[in-house]
Length: 77
Image 1 (cartoon, helix red, strand yellow):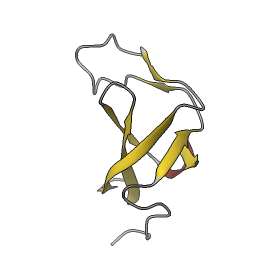
Image 2: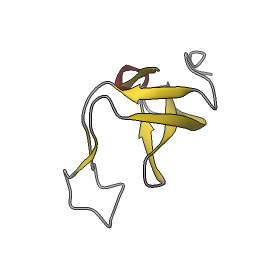
Image 3: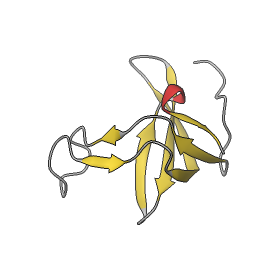
Image 4: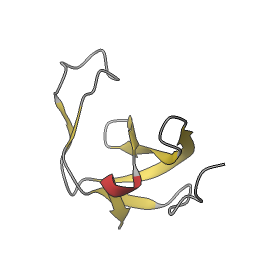
């Protein structure tokens, strides 16, 4: 079992860095800017990145865009 998640489901957070397409969004070009630093969203699910044993937060930003984020990429609003 990995470390306890720092954030909770339903929590409002903001992106701390610009988030780019890593191939997860086939309808967007690779490396396209998906979310700008400072954009707010809400955590809709929390999972575990198996290889790194870190919590992964699925954050819904504007336009129904759900992006997987690591703890260092988001902060509470």
